[in-house]
Amino acid sequence: MDECCVQLWRVFWQIRTGVVKILTLRHCIGRVQLFLAHGGSMDDRKQALLTERRARRFSRRWLLRGLGLVGLGSGAFALTPARSNSYYDGPVSDHFDGVRFFNPGGNNPEGFGRFLKWQLTSRAEAWPATFAPQADMMPKLSAEIQGNVQVTAIGHASFLCQTGGCNILIDPVYAERASPVRFAGPKRVNAPGIAFEALPQIHAVIVTHNHYDHMDVGTLKRLWQRDNPRFITPLGNDTILRDEVGAIEVVALDWDQGMTVAYAANSGAAIEIIAVPTQHWSARGTRDRMHALWASFIVKNGSTTVYAVGDSGFGDGRTFQHVRTRHPKIQLALLPIGAYEPRWFMSTQHMNPAEAVAAFQLCGAERALGHHWGTFQLTNEAIDAPPKALALALQASGIAVDRFVPSWPGVKVQAGIMRIKDW
Ligand SMILES: [Zn+2]
Ligand SMILES: [Zn+2]
Image (cartoon, rainbow, N blue to C red; front, side, top):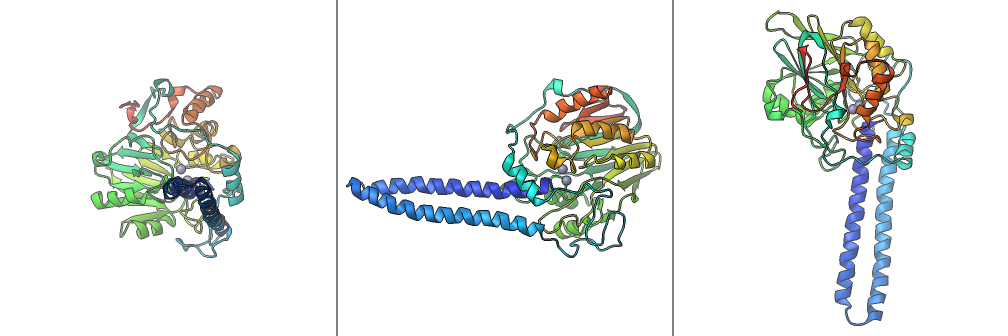
């Protein structure tokens, strides 16, 4: 249980905080009104104040209790397992039990009780309202690689991947907040690396899973209306997209299934997109936990291979070994390095930078960009903790820091010479 619950919890908490503020403001206004109304005698004022205080305390107490009960009630409701799958109806497999998807080998998300413990017993580091990276935080990729691809970071886990004349977006999120609602939830602290209007014509959109910081239906709707791209997503998410985006063209893939999205403009080689196993989970609300599959994706154009991981726990590393076996010679891996504290709660869902370095070694990629940090605060660590921890982990593993760098909105990686521009 990670960002979906964090987002729902923060929405609930912000509403509660807002109500408290309104009540406090009302209280102050009431005091002024009382003073004005009972300006004459001190005794009259005291008596009226006492009566008014009792009435307000009663209503405030009951309102806050009511809100608390709503929060706990929805948590308890979340614990009640739904008996049928909301999105997907298919055969049982080694990662689908007939109702829910699961991670083979265990490592499924923590429950609501542990989530409450996290929220109530620890404090998140404060993030600034706006954030730009320091130069020393951002080592540059320097090595040359072979291939035919350009990847541009848009922010958080969103990327534009261009190869063979085909423009592919990965987990595009242009919303101000990674949240089910517009008025509350984690808010972005920097602008997208490519403005929406500046995006080239998009041919395909990959959505790795249905958490709000990866599946932003507002952005997907705008893309569909503008470019009619093909959507590619793991099993079950096609139902959500049809419900929320409209009559779109969407292909749902199981792990290790792939499809051809286009043929490269010059070579005629197939541009393939393949879903691969990942340790994570899914939910949009409280009753659809694990009802849709999650995945990472391989984007392949001839001998050029990009491995795009959305969210992933490390587990025993089997998913990264699996990818290396099936897709050797990855030129570039997009690996998440953020949203990992506290470890006792997050480790099954999100890697920390040290685990991301281990994943980098296991998957055999030549180079990597570290994403999922620095734009939306989902967990406890400080905003600049991931790149610092990444540098230490690379050093400890004896890996040159220019092979695996933190990505940043606007960072651009080009095959031939991998280089970073625009910051
Ligand atoms: Zn997620
Ligand atoms: Zn995420």
